Image: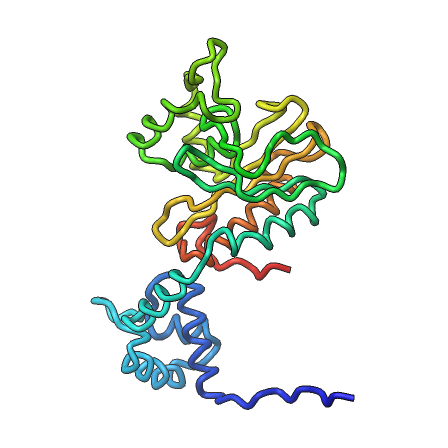
Length: 274
């Protein structure tokens, strides 16, 4: 029989130093010595030499008020990690977990050259008539996924993309031309920006409800949108419902991973995925 793996030997002092870095990341803002030490669970006198060494190594620096913040080396390491990230690859496990946990169909879309494009779809175990397929390009006006992207696009970019609505799913008006946004469209987008969530109830696909949420990157832009879909009336589509809460939690974890500190759904680091 194989012997149990022995725990690797570490350096306790470095682990204490790591606790200070974790406390600073959790705060997502510069902190003074006393606050940083408190959040790391150590006395200021113990924390101070660690912080001095972190400054010398370039992992921390101090702002004009003397508060500790990320140093040049930390920024370089963070950028290196961000460059290696694949947003869609990172989101794949979350899409699968959402479908398994909720019993609903889960989708992921990115903003392609023609519009919001479905790049991942995990269908529910229960048969559902969901007309999405990989590669489907969605309306910016008439779908929850599309409106979620639209809410965070610059006005000039959105206006240009709306002219192409006719090539997107549910983007045609009654006259066969690009659908025009309704009068309350600006208000709808403002509401999405406030709540970080949108719903589509039995529209554009009759009998199918959708809840969609944005995922942000380190620049503050929406890098992808996650959505859950199911038969109308079969699940709670409110902001407080379990499906919406599961979506928000997944989007929060991904936004945090993509460097959206302070731009995700709140300013605290998310719990790890189960």
